[in-house]
Length: 212
Image (tube, helix red, strand yellow):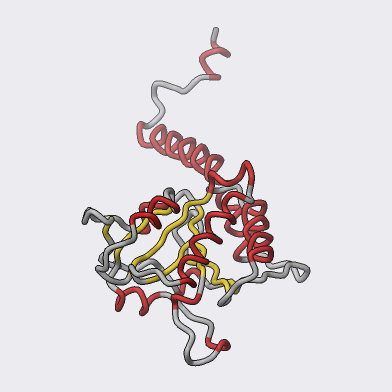
């Protein structure tokens, strides 16, 4: 009976010591649960194998935190890109009139998501609209499933990086962008991007990460 008592916590044990023990156990549980996410993030952003090649340009997430964009849904309700945390986000920018290049990118985003097969549920599509022009009803129906948010164009263009090597006329509307499930802007695809190469990049991202 004496040995059995010695195995359990003593009644005389200081309460603060018991509290510390409880905290350490809680921290251990949190660490175990967070380990897959931390490992995925570390592998992708810190460990960069020489054999890995990307079609899109990797961006340092520390340089492009998502700022306030004055964003709202089409019916005027506040909506932020941070609300998409936990998902991969394919992002495009265009005015409400949506020219041919805009429609091409909308189509590409839809197909790129579909081409991921069973992984497609990990991806959301967002169109950031830079003006107050009304959208074509048929276009909205055709790309139902793409979230359409109006934003302040000045705030947006101060945030999104363009490809400086593509010439002085390059603008944010020329690119597709990718946001990771942690809410980091992390990849920019070139103007008139090759969908097959973009698909390969996205597939590699999904395989490399267990988050989202």
